[in-house]
Every structure is written in structure tokens, then in C-alpha cells.
Image (tube, rainbow, N blue to C red; front, side, top):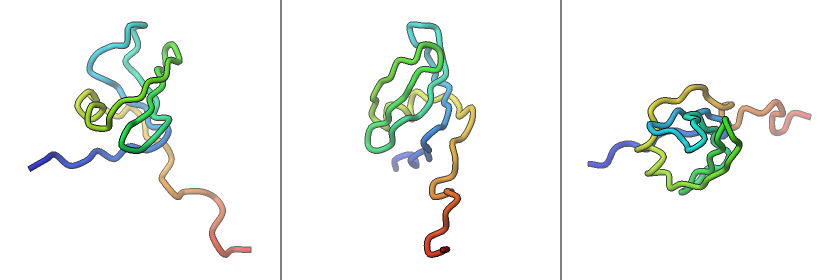
Length: 78
């Protein structure tokens, strides 16, 4: 039975198991989908990795991005 899919949000900061060549471990999620876009918080480099690969490489979620659909405007309110 496959492992459940991790819940990633835009703006999440992830700590990966191995460092980037610049020495940074922390990455921000900048794109969601079958592939995840990640931006290194140390050097600013952006990479695109398969969701499955990111799930394997993630050690912990350092901080969460905003809740999906948590905008300030409510539909039909004005």
C-alpha cells in the first residue's frame, strides 16, 4: 500500500535531508502540482522536482504557508 501523499502548500519551508551545494538545507515551495517548484533560501536557486522525490527527501516542514482558500474576500459578500 503506498504511503499517503504529503500535504504541501505554497510558501511552506521544508528542510531536506541533504544540503544544496551552497550549503543550505531549507527550501520554500513556490509551485504545486505533480512536480513541486522549490527555491533555496540560502542562494535563491529554483528547482523543479517530482512530488514523490520531494516527499522522500523532506526531513521536516519548518513552517507552513497560508491555508488554501484562506483569502480575505468572501465570495458573494458585497
